Image (cartoon, rainbow, N blue to C red):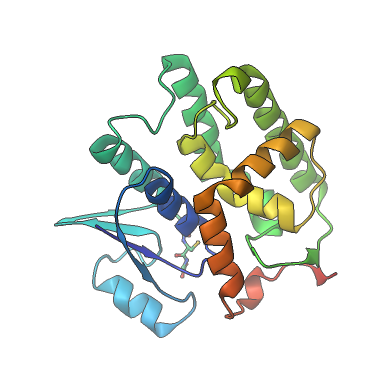
Length: 217
Ligand SMILES: N[C@@H](CCC(=O)N[C@@H](CS)C(=O)NCC(=O)O)C(=O)O
């Protein structure tokens, strides 16, 4: 199995496709391309016309889009264990993942993932409202599922995969969060796969100007 991704420092959607494989110990080869280069589009075009990463290639099957990749891995390799076992919890997990996939635009626009950033941003009211909503979701889930483990639904799940880039964003832009969200972020940041991604991101040197939001601190 091969996964095509982009710069670890910047590519939040790549992180989701990569993390589901790494965290659940599914073996794969990684093809990393640099955003905004000719090679990115040329090599990607050999597999799909989508023009975006992540893209998963499993024998003769090509799957693109982070959520479709997570769902495929969950079905084909995890026997459904990517989602919480309880049906109602699964429904909530799918709600928050869908919301991340199709919304939270102010956070996404104003706080681009930039793992090595030490930059100051001035979030708009919209971004602050989204942060408050995410804080509410995460702290509520942590309170409900604390007996089962330290992740959003207790055990690590696709919900954690989907919010992993927000953990990096909240860390680097020093977003004010509640104590319970801080504890959850510490758990996520200590996850071996998150650490592996983070260290690789710090080692990268390419600069994508459009993802360098805010001012250097
Ligand atoms: N909805 C897609 C979004 C994929 C996406 O926007 N990927 C970005 C990198 S994070 C990309 O490939 N950008 C290259 C481009 O637009 O030229 C997913 O969930 O995978």
